Length: 334
Ligand code: TRP
Image (cartoon, rainbow, N blue to C red; front, top):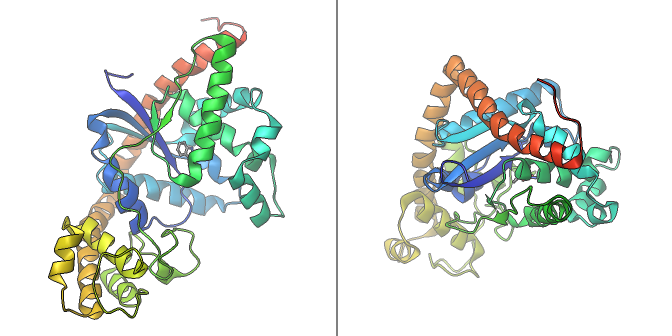
């Protein structure tokens, strides 16, 4: 608990451009969570180097993601938005937790298997112990809840196992985190293959709307979105393409699927797609304007980076010192 609130932690990698799916499915809903939780949102640059990165590009993307968080409405006074690499406790706790994690456990991680298969030329130890760093992120703040997608549930599970193992030896050191189950956003699918999630790493640029896409690009991508031959705007999961467009339109306008069905009753897909495109443009415009303004305000962003890293560090050090003491590391002489 911090200030009487439960603690929420989430991290995002600064690889790839954020999509409309990231916004409607996650970011947009994070904005209100700070009323109920003490929220930490980390740009997890330590995780990013498990695959090779171009240094200038990594730096640029990390700053861009942090700025986007703010542009999307996360108030940096109420939320702790910071770079993982600015709080050394992540690396320190990660090393310690490595010694309480079994090779066999890590070997079972499906994301490791996938990534190892994809990057056969660079299967480094960091890729293998990635889940331990993620456990350190979460446990460092005595986190109660973690909003994660399905693909990260296995990592949250191992985090809980590590925490429980550690607590069983040393007493109640870590809070045991739960997945955040609350109002989550819409699950937005690819515009080209609507059975798949809209992903920032999709190779087909027409499959995803990026938050920085200009209006023409947005309209064009919706025009090309995959639909079906039924020629009816129905909220029917079997019409996967239309179903997804209805979800997007609904998330952008607040209209219910029933209202949308009525609105487009007897109209063609062309009209509907144009309306969805416009609704998305209207959501992205203010976000892009805020982003552009923030980018001009270097001093402000710098101050957010500095202040929030200090805040995060304050809580991180508390947990870290407790852990070090429990393990038997010598006390610091002041
Ligand atoms: N591994 C997560 C992802 O790729 C990012 C992440 C790192 C994270 N540390 C975290 C998410 C802690 C939640 C909590 O999506």
